[in-house]
Length: 217
Ligand SMILES: Nc1nc2c(ncn2[C@@H]2O[C@H](COP(=O)(O)OP(=O)(O)O)[C@@H](O)[C@H]2O)c(=O)[nH]1
Ligand SMILES: [Mg+2]
Image (cartoon, rainbow, N blue to C red; front, side, top):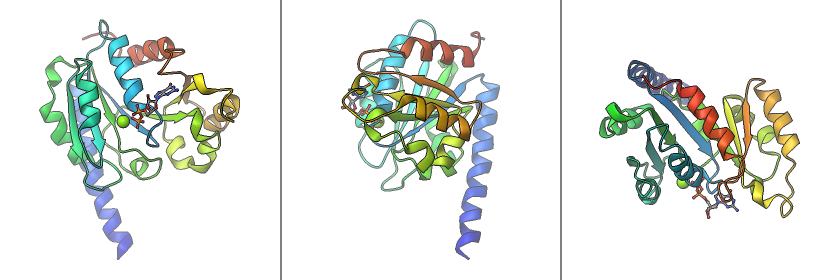
């Protein structure tokens, strides 16, 4: 019984995700689903990315949190539009929540929509949102065992951002091991080692994001 209810929830979500994907394709919008533990630096990376790409790509953001619109406020301070979804306890966003939020965004004037999912490495993985690609952020303070401990999440990531490399030397974190383990789970994964604090490594990430978007149409 429990399994069949879960399956129906996932089926309904997949239908809404397919509709979102069709909308993004039709509008030529690149949609990224950003997943990580709380505090890995998603909002900081996003704020810097918006500022770093402001002359090249127009980015809108959908924020998912259990409570508060603090992250949407942080994004709006960059000048980018941001819609906050409060999940009231749910540990992931759903495709229906995303389609409602997308309607609030000025999609005619956007090239990229980034969805910052609820912070955890488990639940968001099971719910497609209609994204073009998934980005998993792993910060050096979390330990280098996360790809092997959360293989489902990393296997579905097209991009891994290793954040807080400014802390290497203060924490036990082997960047090469994470690169190896992530590639075992997805041989095609693109990995960038960055610091959203110092800016190190971010230009390569920016260029890759622009290449995913393709020329402005
Ligand atoms: N040292 C360091 N701290 C960072 C970096 N990126 C983010 N932080 C800090 O990590 C904390 C969590 O960042 P936040 O962007 O809110 O993470 P989120 O929960 O994944 O959105 C904040 O105190 C940030 O200032 C980084 O590259 N290096
Ligand atoms: Mg955040």
